[in-house]
Image (cartoon, rainbow, N blue to C red):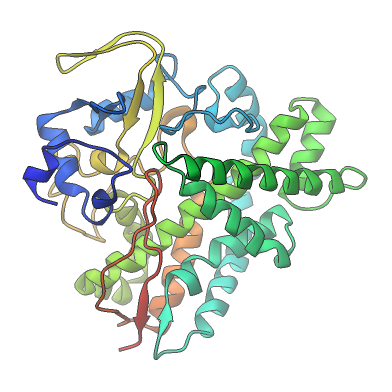
Length: 392
């Protein structure tokens, strides 16, 4: 996409934005820091400081009407991610106990074992880093964490794929997503009910026990919490890992640094999160008029926080368009910030490190196929659909 194309506007669901969104993001940051889409009416903020402010000002920028341009579906269970305080604070204080550093550290040996086993089965002559690794590690881990049977993984993977492909201007995708949403909720409700007679030693069992003993969550909120873990714990992590394989493959000199120094795996994952954010944008709705950069955003407006643009803002990062696995990153917005900072961030990072370590240990010089990358057809998730590769 050229600068001329960029000047035509910003639509997060536009197909031509997926392959190379950075020209549009650069134009937004420099020429239209408060942009209004003429067709859909939403506003977009793209500078790091502006997006950070939105994330921390929940009273002005509310999540309660949904966090995507489609808004809040009428038939979805209440989820923390679409709540404001005080209810958000009440629920988060309960469930965050499942994601303490100690709890995540306890999972580390199993996560690494899952990644190594998957990579060990790859054929050196040809494999798909998304289908065979990035798409498998999170599904296996979240299934074990939640206590979902291994045989059911393809079911919820299918539901999630339909959910993330919805587009506000394509009614058929909304209809399909609502049908998948209903099936997923029915499945999870059955999983919850199965744990009521006897609590199990998994995250669903933990949530059921906390909800029943404390009375702090009603059944709909409990279902919403489990659902959020399953959906968020899969797709965003899959895209993070897929983007990591893609960028390390595209930047072999940087990958060589990671191969030579294992302590750079963690920083490399942070650079992938900044450089190729797996969640490029999310929304809030204003509760009052807001003035920014000479533009007034009226109350009741949808405001898109363009994380992927903010994470390459030269006001925050030096030489932001350079992929540097040794870059010192004090903060980025890939996991959000403030009260809605991703609860599962540490687990996502662990899975990404395990997957990258397993692949570069066996295939330090893997070669990506010389073909255009097919990107996930979604406005609020970005990652490769497939990533053909082989050993050198």
